[in-house]
Length: 173
Image (cartoon, rainbow, N blue to C red):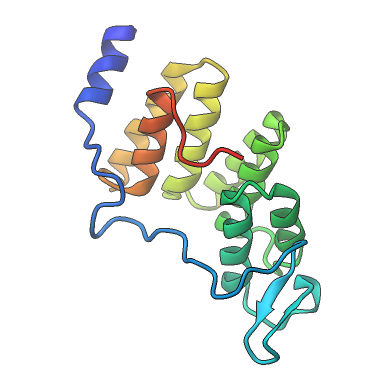
């Protein structure tokens, strides 16, 4: 098993954030706090539940909070997303719950995200990371293979999972 694991990692491209791969998380123009989001019309921070912004905008903000380690704030924003069954929404719910220590709940959200969109390679990456954290490297390798089979070779999703498998992670809160 260790030989297969080592081979999988050495054959993997490690060009993190290569051109043409997934976009990185956009930097916020204005940093709001306490789960609020920026309203460009009023130039103020507002509660996401009162925001007229799109789900995509709210998901970008939730992702910024999550990647900064502010999981409670991310969940406040996620709660305001209208389409709670969207694969990206489910993925972020899974990510925040897993990072908050609710691993089983996080896994359930990843499963729901992949039911909605089996090609969601970011959900597969986070699911693989969860398996690494649980010591199940075979399951993590399965997700790595799925990411590659679904066109994710060289992507941020692949890089995140490989980094986790090597003992590190890009987003520690």
